[in-house]
Length: 603
Image: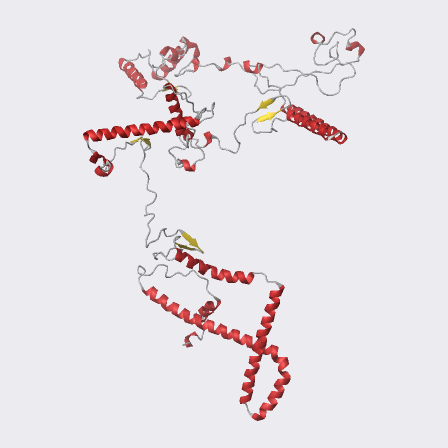
C-alpha cells in the first residue's frame, strides 16, 4: 500500500506549473523502475513490521494492511497527504442533539393572574402564551377579549429541543428530587401525628376499661407500628404482622470485610458475585497465607476443616451401602450409620490383617517389614515438588523456611526453660527457677520459693504499716510509748546520779538541790536532745559502713577494669538497685572536687 495523489485536473495543472517554474522542466518526470521497486519493498517492510507505519495528517499510524482503494481519497476530497479522514463520519454530517440534562418546566406559571385582557393574548381565555387557534380551553360564548374577566393563567413555554433516541425516552428528565424528599417527609410527619393521636386515644381508653381491654389495644398498636416499619422485627430475618408473616432476608453485617476486599489483586481468587462465593484463599502466595492468621481463608476451607471430611465419608458410605441393598440414610439414621461404619472398618481391618498374615506364612519375609524406612536408609525421598516460573509451588509441599539464624530452645545447666522466659523489675531470667543470673545452675521450685520470699518480705512490712488500726490499738500503742519514755527518763536520772556522786562533796549538795528543783522543767528538753544525739550517732554509723562498702566496691571495680572484658563475669558492671541515702552521702564524701582550692592539701 502506497499513497498516490488523486487530484482534479485543474489542481494537477497548477501543481505542474508551479513545479515547472521551480525546476525548469518542460515535461513531468516519470517514475523510474528503481523508485517503483523501492516503494514496493517499503510497503512489504511495513506489512512485516520492520519499517515504521505511514502517518496521517494528525500523526496517527495507518494500518499497512488496509487496501489501496480504501485508503485512497477521492479526487474531490482534495487530500495531498495520506489520510483516512474520508472514511470517518464528517463533522458537518453528525447530528447535534440537545444534552440529556436540559430541564424545563411544564404547566401553569406561579404567581398572580391578570385581571384584565392584555393586547396580543388569546381571545378565548386571555393567556399570553398561545393564540386562539392553539387554545385548548372550551370555546367560550363570549371570549375574554370582550368580557375582560376570568382570565386564564399563563403556561410555561416548552422549548423546542432536538433530542436523540435516549433523550426522547428519558423518564427522569424533569424529575425534582427535592420535591420528592419533601413529599416523603410530609408523609412521615402525617404518620407520626396519626400514631401519636392513636396512642393518646388508646391511653385514654385504657384508663376507662379493664386490663384485658388494655392488652388488646396494645396488640393492635404493635400491629399498626409493624405496618409502617419493616426494620423493627421480633427475630432476625423475619417480620410479623397481624394477618401474615413476611420473611425478610438479612444481608451481611456492614462492619464485616467483604470477601473481594481481602486482596485487590486481579490475579487473586475469583469472586462470584451471583452466589457471593470465593472458593479459593484470597491471600494465597502472600505473607498472610497462614490460615491461623486469617479471618477468611476461602469457602473451600470450610469443606476441609473440622468434621466436614468425616461427614463426607459417612455420606459416601451411606450411598454405597444403599446401592448394595442396605436401607440407610445420613440424616434419618445417623446412629445406625455410625455403627455400621464402625463394623465395616473393623471387618475391613481384620480382612487386611488376615491376608497379610497368610501371605507372610506362605512366603515369609517378616524380617524385611521390620526394616527402617527408605528415607533413613538411602537419605533421600520421593516427594515430588513442582515449581512455577515465579518460584511458587504448583505441586507438592514446599520446604519450610528457617525461622531464625540462631539456635532455638537450647537448655543449659539443667534448666527446663530458656534465658529470657522470665522478667521482673527490668531484669530477665529463667522461668523454671526465677533466677536472674545467666549460665547459673537451675534450682527448680526451691529457687522460686526463695525468690518469692525475698520479694514478699518488704511488701509484708509495708502492708502491716499501712493497715488501719482501731482506737483501742492506738490507745495501747500510746501507752506503750509513754512507758518506754518513762523507763528512758529513769535510766537517764540514774546515770546523772552516778555522775554527780563522783564530783566533789562540797558542790554535790548544791547541784543536787538545783537539779531537783529544775528536773521537772528540763525533762522534755533533755529527751529531745538525747533522741537527736542517738539519731545522729546512728546516721554516723551507717555513713561509716557505707564508706567502707564504697571503698570495697571501688577496689572490686578497679580489679574488674584491669581484667580482659572477655574474661569478665556476666553483668558484673551492672547493678540494678536504687542507692540508699547513706550510700549517696558516702559517694559525695568520697568524690573529690577539683574546683576546691584546698583539694591539693587533702590527704
